[in-house]
Length: 162
Length: 448
Image 1 (cartoon, rainbow over the protein chains, first blue to last red):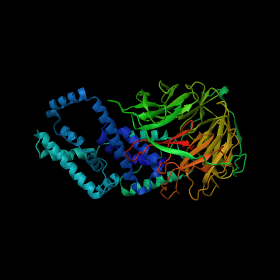
Image 2: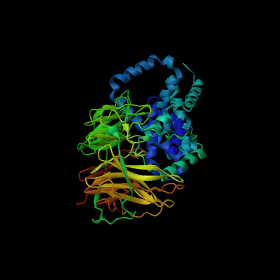
Image 3: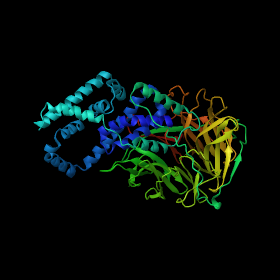
Image 4: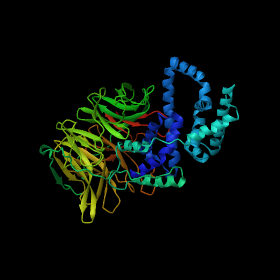
């Protein structure tokens, strides 16, 4: 497995950044491990070695989405107290957390599709073409989704400022 | 309050920071350690899957998506036999050459595959993230990744039918991340990860777990454990196989396999372990595929699988009468072919007749006793410089281990995953990890 271990070594930063952007610091290492585990198991199904990069990133994106769905479910269960308390705290601390907090909120409220192109492009460092390959969408769609995602984030922040 | 002009800059900085985050320094190493807990596939020679990985590494560099670099992390050091070994532990070994020429023997039973009816189900339960699954004490048990509120642990699930699951216990391994489950004697064994270390947990019922083998500094704790004659036999990641009376003190077996595949088969004559032994020759050394048998956990007998040519065992199992092994074999300088072997006593191994596959042999990935015979599943592979053809999973049937035929029908797109037998039901789990979707469970039952 040495060759695959080299891939793990080389690809970990990219997959970690992707996972961290999706699920945060705490959950990212586990997601990284599961992505490589999945890739190792599923490797025989990969037809074209040239597509390994996009294929690996697609596994990572789908894994993150699954984790997020689970976390949303957990949050919904605890909504009665924790969410209301959290909202109050967020309001109280707003002057201190300033822009980073609101940008994070704007990012977190993006749709899965928008967040995926942002993360693949900015966190994983993929080109637009590679983003498109990873998500299985046309390059033009990837480009327009990226622009739309940025517009949504900016609009969200402006509305937040009012 | 910041202005609109400052916000886009802040967005740029936010996105830029995403691309600068550095992973924890041990993350890649930890991941590799965890991968080593995976049931290994082919070993001992360049294998199609491995060759594909090498091609991938080159391709990855070429497209510049990743910077592929890293040391050879395969352990090379071999430890001397433990000082703790006592005279009573001193194992003895006998070596048996192949009892038969590598010619398939005809089966006394006509190898006519049964007709199975397959139905597709979707797994339901508290978590879709199945990690491993076993059948234990007349029920199904599985470890799933189940992030709890504020945590990120695992849960043990249980099921009566293998389809509908419910939580048996959450975080059974404390803060360790549990992974591989196996059955050894009357115990359920789980391998878990703690950072880049491995811990071994034991349970009598799947509900209550005790930390059995804690971390060590040598990374030589067993990664597969079997039980025979009241003793434990463990296969470490590398080096000699280990034995133990109590599970607390493990000693290297001085005459057992030194390079056992992480696979233990409990069968009618004791524990069988496939191993690829490095045998010195005048020209250097050669790999020799052997099957080691121990009936008492102290003494080992070695049976060489093929005296001329190479052989690789990928999977093996046993029912109450017969051991079977599947893999590939071929002449020293020739192409390997799909191959299978059988043994009634774990010592004398005979080549079984198998379907012919032109080109690269398929890779068996699972074999289980089923309906008085055996069912195996495999995946197509390819030559080293070619990507693997993605075809339907291949399944085989043998009434007795002596002859194998293709088992027709069943799900076409499913790459074989764990096979679990529950009476007349054969369950095949498949998690489509590269796309969203529930775990598929294909259930086969004899037609009529």
